Amino acid sequence: MTSKHLIVSDLDGTLLDDHKSISMANLEAIDHIRNNGHLFSIATSRYYLSIKHFLRILKIEGPVICSNGSLIYDFNKDSILYLNTIDSNIARLTAEYTINHNYQFLMQSPNLMAVTKGHCRLSFFENLNRKIANPEDHFLPTVIDFTNWHDYSNVFQMAIITDDTKSTELEYQKLLKGMPVNVMASGKDLVVITPIDSSKAKALSFLSTYYGLKDDDVIFFGDNENDESVFKAFKHCVAMGNAIDDIKNIAEFVTLDNNDDAIAYALKNCYQLY
Image 1 (cartoon, rainbow, N blue to C red):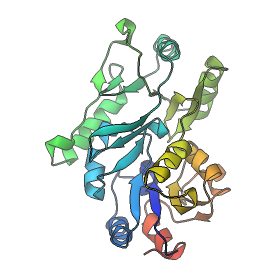
Image 2: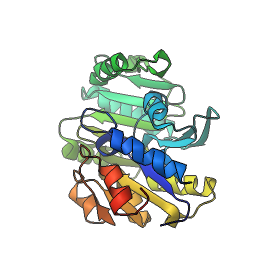
Image 3: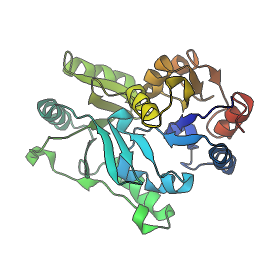
């Protein structure tokens, strides 16, 4: 491959190892392809204001795909390029059901990531902040009493914490059947709800057009169910060695797992870009 490409990677379970770090080999590979005229970005389920630390390490200044494709944010311009929201009545129904069934959940909207009291993600972000030297990169969700919350406008992603993603996914698919939302597992303990026409694939097509590239110029790395739309829509997709079988079965290549410099390995051995 010699033409200009846009290389995009999922974060958790893909670019990040199990300790939520990016290996030096992967960072060197990303620097190398960028120095040779290629572009690099990420597509994650994470909230856009919570990933500044990783963007700084990766030297990403341009648009990134967040919240499973519901939002594209340009950190260089400090602006939202693309936003797709959940109908406010559906967001309210989801929140009320979740609270009544004693699930922990989080809600994402512009300038606000809210969580239920005692949410386990609070300790996650607190621990992450301790490891981040720059206070500007620190992020903590806002704790909200959702029993008294009424503003469900501009919500673009909701996520339920669960120790059984498959059964919880089916539970919420049943609850929201026929409504214009996607319900899917994301990682090992989350079920996420996004607008029906939001996906990493759609957002990635938007991003490739933004850069004046074709979809065939995109190389994507992923590992889980929320990456599946990209694997079905794009030709050059690489599954991690730790990816679910549904992803591996439709990947162009399967690389090493996320603890073994898999991005660098694939860029060198599958695409000869490094």
